[in-house]
Image 1: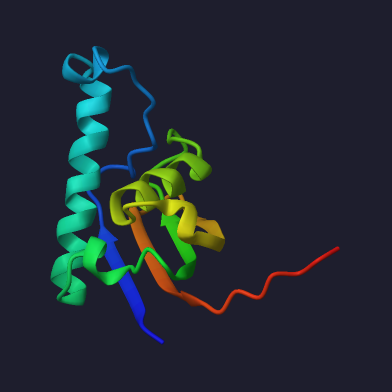
Image 2: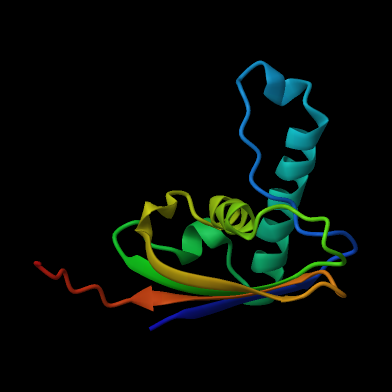
Length: 126
């Protein structure tokens, strides 16, 4: 079972998911910042795992993740929106991510420490 890791130290706090409209995506500087952050994550993933994320994750398989988040300070985006941005950057369709957890580790250093592995999903009936 393949395991992938992405560890990245950041100068600024991780950029949270940014919702926008088709028109605003060309003018909204916050959205541009979000897009640039996603590109950084894609490149770092490729560099650290020797494969692009879209090739690494099979659309027919399910995955789980563990994410540790560090912030430079207490002025930051919601951690769940950081998760959304990370998954959007790495997965063509993040509906394949069925299980995950995240935690904020510190407010003194900005970083992401992500582990992703294949999930042997067994459907349960209540």
